[in-house]
Image (cartoon, rainbow, N blue to C red; front, side, top):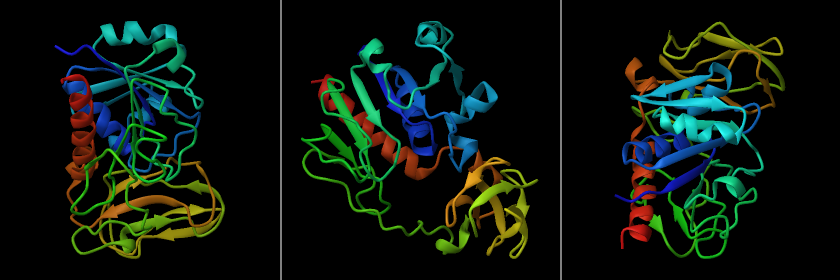
Length: 264
């Protein structure tokens, strides 16, 4: 058995998919987040533990902790510790074997190839062999989940993936800057043209019928054009609470990279 510690930066949908795969593969995983996470697909985001205390996804539970001193006790309970640590200072205490930058910022916010024995970056913004050891492709298409050992991932297209023939129309964006208010919940069914909330008094309408798959929390502060939610035109509520095909593919690439490095 390979006894490895993995530190994951980020607690959003893709980071959570990676964490879930690695926990199920019997690695010790710890997550770091910012003070106010802004994951849209909160039904499958471990960062919800920051607000809820715990978050469970497909049988794996994360517990929010306030100190690195609590990491070991959470592991002993079979759960994944998550703490607020934007600068990832816990790496100096934890000394992880693997560090995964899963922030999905489309740029490197400070991850270094020297941060761990194996450093992995998800998506664009990292150069394999320079910033990180390995880059995992996050763009949908033929290369999704590919392990890149030299070079970079494909550039961000800015175009949402197509689901049931629908792309940009399924994404909800802030019409202006301001505070978001809503009484809708993830999993709610909505009709085309229905108001799902307001930003500084301006309505946010969905352009398609389906279920709300992702939605920021009521009270979130937004800037104009910011993604605040998305509607799944397939209308299947279970998809709101289970790991996506994209997240599973990326998680598979991370697992391959780790096993290639440590299972030689």
